[in-house]
Length: 57
Image (cartoon, rainbow, N blue to C red):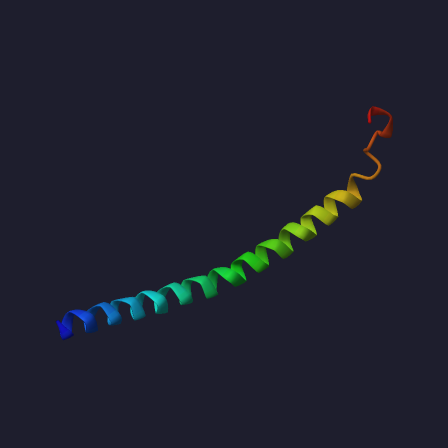
């Protein structure tokens, strides 16, 4: 019984370690994606300023 409990604890610990590493890596990918998307959105908003037709609102 002791070895089963110890095995479960070790498996849970390993799962948390792997999950934490994956989430930590994906966090920075998400931050970089948000920055790139924000720059693209800003660029499109600036360059599309002359193409807008406000009479179609």
